[in-house]
Image (cartoon, rainbow, N blue to C red; front, side, top):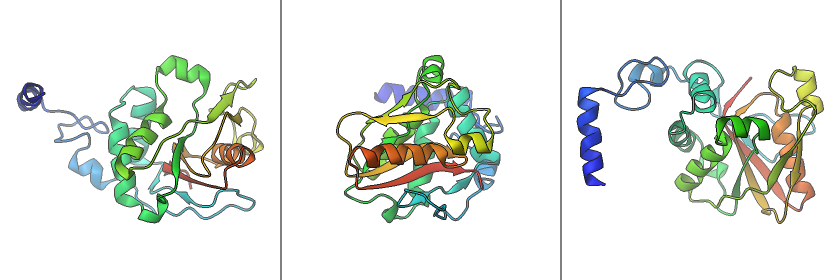
Length: 214
């Protein structure tokens, strides 16, 4: 382990790591400039009419470097970025976003995209977040096969109507759950997942996403 760290440090001197956003040399996964350009916003998302979510938190707008990080994780297999995104969430959100009696629940991935990518980006983010906030992690949700095979490419009205998304809860569910995902676009996915948990016996459901689309 020590040799590995020494080798990595020596390698970084010869070939400095690159920023995942601008691809310039950086001391971490983000250069100083891109870190300063992260589009931070008021993290407590206003409740939508009819929402079943107790609270929803999202500290970044889905723009600029934040959008680039999400795309790098999802579409370029930059799985190490889940740790950086979890770090941002912990730094930006207040302790009440992570109640002591809560369990983190990742939003389940579309089965076809899971096979294509070989990993579940929301699960990676939830796992990294669970380690930092010291909360348990559970995976009771299942995304069912749909004729639309996912929501990507659907318009806002189709997303809100639930087309392309069917979610069920399998087995026991935590009484207090916090859904974890990378992006909240319309909120339809979070609402479907929350309803599935509440229908299976959960008492309270909140949500945390890395980014949101205003």
